[in-house]
Length: 232
Image (cartoon, rainbow, N blue to C red):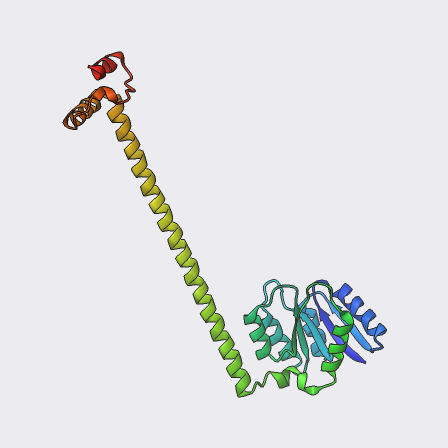
């Protein structure tokens, strides 16, 4: 019988669903649930299972740390990591380096029979053990290093894009403030010209030089004396 440790916050219900799928598929697999990594690691050290089905997210622990503890407890384990989140390339690279045999995304409607069949297939070969897969070939190491370098390049490009957008917003805001200030100054100057005695005197001098009468200009003088002077 194939023995599998299911390590997940919802391990109990997940193990029940997997066991039901195994029975319907005619597979003899025992699924043992653990809701946290430490008890599962202790169980693996005491009596190594054929495979560990491990959720990748744990409070206070990275997937690398959890995998390292499993590898120290039972180096010949087979491990499948699964996640309900979007694929994290850096975590995927860490999983590859530690010899994880697969990385699944637990999204949408899960085909548990397909999971059971894949678990059986991995347990039928010694080539899927952590001790074997962690001994990466030169090409595998190159691929991992290349993927990590590409992630770094993309993260740098994203940071530069964010900084550029921030700078554009800053310049747009500055231009808006400058334009608004110019409009306000213009409005204040116009109001001054049309409502003050000094402004009216200036307007008369300007319109006089241009051969026009001040009486042709609209008058918003606030006082009767200003209005009288404006019409003279």
